[in-house]
Length: 298
Image 1 (cartoon, one colour):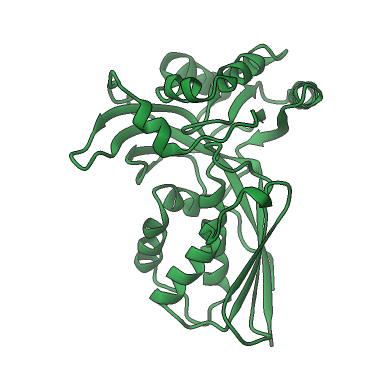
Image 2: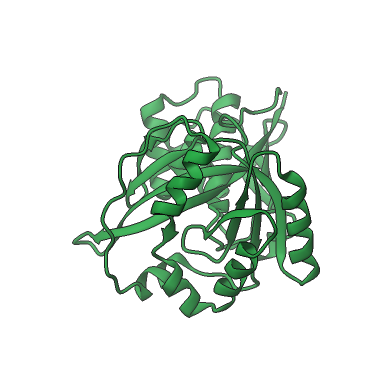
């Protein structure tokens, strides 16, 4: 007998991001505030009902940009190596998040797959073992597994809860250019920023906008825009949208975002439509979507 689940894989936003140093191994040390959107990919999982190896199918508008083996395939393999107690798995990823855009799409998909495997398994992995599997897949996967706003430090793997964020309408937009994180970090030549001050929630909209105005920004914007000048153009267009209260670049780019006041969904919808008419990829969404998404019932 087979069992199936469908899980949300929300896009991640770095509301601000600082580069505060570099480790001896060459990795940069970061400090920032990350949250999640209602918009994202979906990951379907089916366990049982057939023989053979695990299989992953990628569909959706950005499927053609996903290189094999994708992070979902790697997540299933890593989870199985740590547990193995599950029949063959068939996964379907609907890829709506742009690839190499700083929105954590691959990490979100991997985290959704891990949540689903835990729900399908007769003996799920203990929490510590699951976290180790997530860490082995990339710095953003534990963040996406938690699925809640967090202050991110270290190489993005040190997480401190940031408290509930206000529900804010948002617009995501990205140029055609994809940016590889490694290339952006190699272009970063300082100076390093000081660590951000302590961040304590819960947040009102006014307090969050004040924080972003005072501490916001992304230290990777300059190297990202040097590699892909369209990033700066998209950011300027988002900042100029009617009603936009704050605009920034997420992660190492190329995607950018604009946040709007609570209840201003109409402005976000109109802004996304205007950008799409000019040929940009753009969607209206909201921040945050709520608690970490749970799998649908089998």
